[in-house]
Length: 152
Image (cartoon, rainbow, N blue to C red; front, side, top):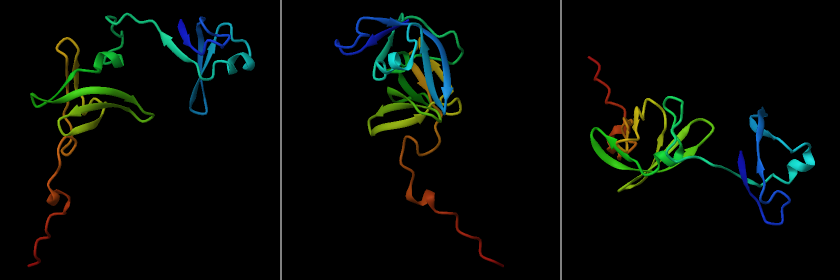
């Protein structure tokens, strides 16, 4: 069940919706809701924000799945040293990103198993194993190819 956030002038104000089906059309999700029988009725929901009631202590039944609110604020640790804090989770088409606030600024960390091998909600820690250069500047000579061996 979704609670709707719409202007008070909307006929949908104060109502809830039940999702009956979700289909993909041209790489876009399209939801079908009980009581929204035609396109004209659906047009009134185009800019509506859908809210879901969720017990904040509830955890996902899926392995390695978390709600954004569970991740925001967690310490980000690399090699046992805290490097920052999760500020936001961005959901992009290719992959999710953790936006990590560090003393040097914000770092976008791909939220993939190879770079984020563990999330421990109880301890409040996200462990990262980033590639070189993600959290620090690489020396200028790191971009240069090694010198060729002289021919004998």
